[in-house]
Length: 72
Image 1 (cartoon, rainbow, N blue to C red):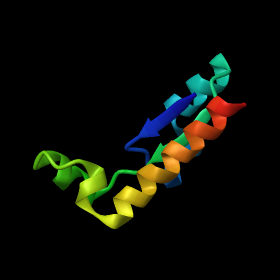
Image 2 (cartoon, rainbow, N blue to C red):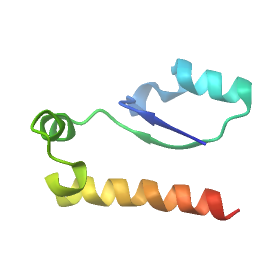
Image 3 (cartoon, rainbow, N blue to C red):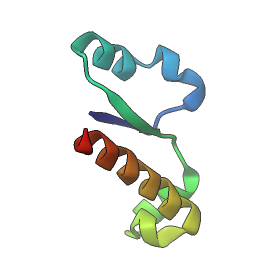
Image 4 (cartoon, rainbow, N blue to C red):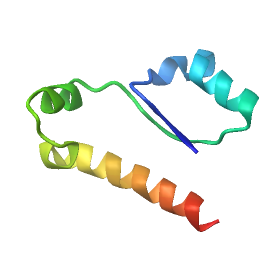
């Protein structure tokens, strides 16, 4: 499966990556919207899980989606 990073949720339907995945039969497991907080933590070398509870929850949700897909 695919996780689309730095994706504008308002533009996902027009996203070239989404179109490519659909054409190739690749399942989109999740998307990660561009986030200033995440960008700043990355620039400081801080992992998203350590940067904030909000980011930790988001990445935990993504991991859960991956685990569900793998378990199928």
